[in-house]
Image (cartoon, rainbow, N blue to C red; front, top):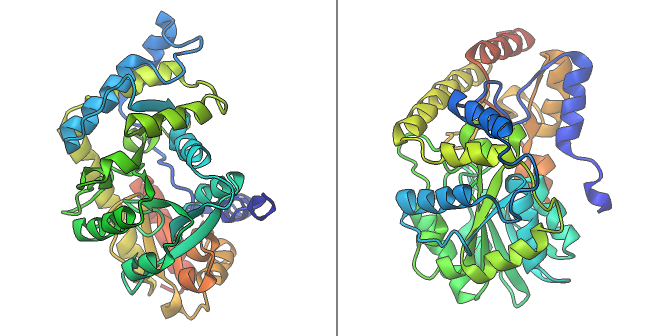
Length: 380
């Protein structure tokens, strides 16, 4: 685990603290989610629902709500008794799945830049990480590179859409190509869909498990924290076929065992909120995305289209920086703003190269202040 001892997030957060910067590096909202969910969590505490150990695989109302959500939005049929497990955030679901399914020397193919918990979990499982680039000027998944990366030891393709950090939402055509490769090589897919509710414009999220031949080989991971803006509650889940979820359950019970009892009741309520709630949520985030994107363009950055997640990606080369890491180490003192360089989330620094991730899940007044600081720092 030595390579995972430090992270780019820790480095940038320390810089932010040291200079009093606005932290647009970490992806958490600065406004709470729906009040009705907070009221339900408080009521659960007062009623004694979940104050002691909840069921190991999650309270049944939440498991039923997760199954209903997958059926209603995507047409995925799940048995809440056997095909759902509640976890301590999406992170525990991902780690549990990797440790359950990957043995010593098995290869896990993952698109880079990646979320750093993927690589740590692969190391804990003693797997071999094989990175495939998000490539081209729009940072789309490189399907030919994925095909070339597959081999006899490939056990798992780790997929993330909407994709952190690029903000790309994989298209049906891209997912169909990935599915064909997975089926051809008879490997499993771990699909991180933590940002499933955070897609914008017409870039609707499509779970890969809905494609022909994919449900039986796919574990899908969801996040209550990301869907409802309560990241501190740490409620996530994994869904899929009974045999794969059974394997995840075995590992997960030896990690946190159980967690978040009262918050599970609140998330069960959240998953049955009307579609209008999620549409309004996306509309508000779209306005914040557009505000920050315009601000970044105003200082001369090239801003890539953001189709989903909390994040905007920009290219720093127009400002004369050699790479994103140099830029991110400079702007905390130059402008008192912090962002995350892609190359800190890549095996190949050239893949991340000039790209930087910015979080726009902040109040408009915070984003406006960050933009003003950047404009002053860069002579705008």
